[in-house]
Image (cartoon, rainbow, N blue to C red):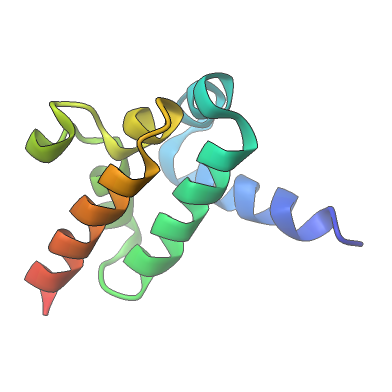
Length: 93
């Protein structure tokens, strides 16, 4: 039973951003990167629609040196992604 929830969450992320993006995330950063992406997704879902969530997760960000949040998470830059996410959410208020 425990393994069903994370797999459901991963499936939701795959539906949103595509299998290729999630596979690259896992190849680069493993389960820690996936958990960071899922945390970001849950926060984003409280502020923007699904299309905007997908766009934010996959679009290069100036504060991440042109990397998308998923790429940065795959590189282990979880704190940097959290900082950028905080700024984005603050701008939505």
